Image 1: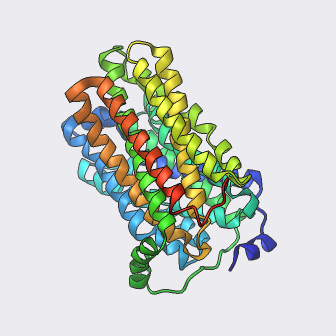
Image 2 (image 1 turned 60 degrees about the vertical axis):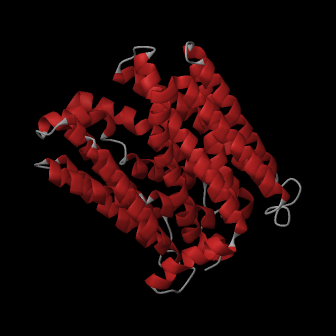
Length: 402
């Protein structure tokens, strides 16, 4: 079924787009609920705090498995059915996590829940396919904005719920929220015919074929890796800064995520700029914002106002870069959008892993200013790569402004 076929039978309204954004955010938030609860969970399940830290790793391992092995199925089966199935697994695993009798059980359930969290990356290409071509940038920005808000706000929400009802209540609330979303999507979304007919082994092999064939995808994968590397590095190291230099408590540190969310919420503006035919300009502006953001964050070492403004500018730039990357790759073959998503997002995710490791090493070696200096170098490298892409890869595929 082509995009035009979708449009004849279904209209992607702003309200439905918002619902899909909430679905993305709620799905991916499950990866981060445990982070502020590790000490409490450790006490309740009689393990050390360091052992409890494996819960976050368990979720991330599951998410990687979901990205690599389930998301590509969106090209060969009804995406609506795939989304509902993955949400059903997420509901069961969240409810199971709430009732976990021991640490090992909770670990296994969080791996399975992480796999189901990849629902978000099935929703995104589906939303793009349902959108009118003239609104793809806006839709991509809105849905991806929901995903980033889920990442940024998950810790805050988890901590607040746990304060009131304990850590198990967090997973009860998550299960209920996911079940409600599943029912709404079941009633609203149309069946969506697959865009390809391949066996599973051929489907997986074709991802590497697509990467080898699409130079635009490879360029955007490189930019995505750098964007997430810088993002993870900033948010990991900022915890050290706020605790050591400012002496803030865990609860206060968590509130800084609201500033990041506010900055990210403005990123769909760049999606609309891309819709207007200025994709090249939007990418240049977003990476310039990231570079400026690092400068402000460096000033924030002793000035909390500069730090907050830096977060706003930085998170706007990173999210906008992510939106413009996805908007561009979704302009490639519509029949391959789920596999394009897997190729891009796995690279993006590994950027986050690299950034988290780099943050700790850099902060130990030279403190916050070294972190900011490395972040600025990453942003400058991305601008240099982007200049090369404009001169070579996208010169023949994108117009002067597009």
